[in-house]
Length: 154
Figure 1: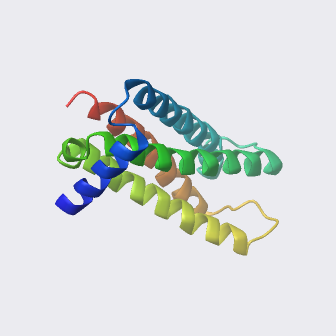
Figure 2: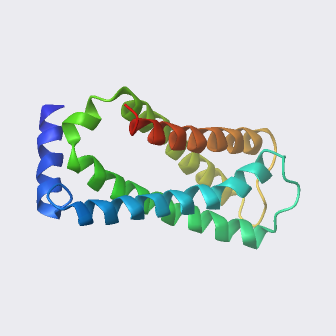
């Protein structure tokens, strides 16, 4: 863990996130925007998969999934930069560690679902697996959002 903290500290110093309040603020704002893209994109898709929302055009669903993928990638990149600003503090925070676990589960769920959906090209995924994947995704990303906010209060 010390090696990881040292590596992240070097990233924070070289990127300017550790040394510049405006850079840290800009990265933080970009992280929030990326989370909005991720959750805003995936929320309706998850509700559709879970059977809570009955009608969502497949083209709109694909667009929302692309938006969510872009948001996830940007959130990971900006999250690493934010982590690099105070790696020792974050790596010792139980809410941060819980968030990383939940994000890992949510990302694994998304990759597994994408793999399954690609095998069924041209069809909107349905059935028990789609409902379960949608609920796991919905709960996972909302839990990650809540845990992320809680980090600021610990």
